[in-house]
Amino acid sequence: MSQIPLKFSGDFSNHYNIGRKHDTLRVSFPELGQWIAYPHTEGETPMPESIEKHTPNCKIYKNVGYSIKNLHEFLITVCPRYIDFDYKECFFDFNLEDVEVSVGEPTPLAIYIFSKNYDEDWHGLWEDIRSLRIHGINADEVELYLYNALIYISELKNIDIELLSIEIPYWDYAEENEQQIEQKNLPIFKDIEPTQLYFYGMQEKNHMSAFLYFYRIIEYYASKFKIEELGKKRSDGTITPLNFFKEIKNICREGERENICIFIKGVVPESLVNKAFKANLIDSKDVSRFASGLYDFRCGLVHSKYERKEEIVVESILDRTSDVKYWTNIISSLAREIINEFAK
Image 1 (cartoon, rainbow, N blue to C red):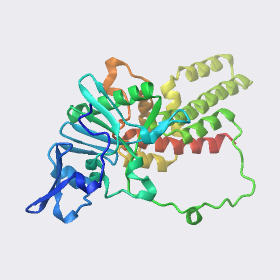
Image 2: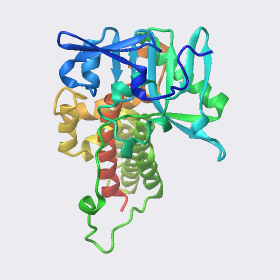
Image 3: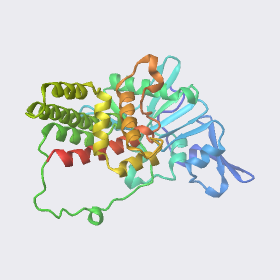
Image 4: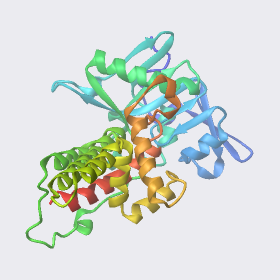
């Protein structure tokens, strides 16, 4: 039986007790054996950052979950793979070796922590949200156990789970922000493969996967122009056989890295170089540093050799503001520039 209840009956306020010591409020949750603390000036809707600062052994993972001592909880959305699945009955628990994992209603502790940013119209009812709890490990182990839990739930329960971020709502009113299409006849992109790649990159939610879709557009045109350059040399009737041999040899000597970097340097706008520098992705506003930095980042995504594990790039599920996100944002803009220039 799960040590963390799968459901919590009765009024939310019945599940916690508030005490005050000097300028600090301490809120205890007896059913969970946990407590949090924060400045009394924040009332009963504290900022998650304040809780993290004033509660020992507490870590807040953006707006998706928390760790306090050996309890870790993440708000989730359950995505069934078959039509008759009732997510409202999605309650279960299991063990990963001797560590307890459960899926149930958000605990009163989670609701209390994230109530500041919660909006019922935006996030839905708390009773319709679920949480994944991991109990019995330290915070430095939680990410590994979280991946394992998500893998086993996907395989054994035939459902997909996404972390739910309780962020401050941003209402985008279409009638105010809709961009007007001034041109009646918009030009189409005529190269089908780059157009496909750009479309799927736009649709992809995973930053790592999206990056590779956009990068493949760079590969496509870099190799295309390499072949066209060879073709021009071949068709040049004024060049001597010896000079033809030398020029072809020089062109073919360029490796993949050099070829990709040469192409990037020829197409990247200065604004993207500056953006990469501002995000600390490169150490100078130099187009060569941008090109090599982007290529090195791509290699870290594609390759995962054990002996070079320090170079492996993987985005953490608990930190979506990593370099992966920033590089993906930049390469999506670069890919758009490229197809706008060459695919029409």
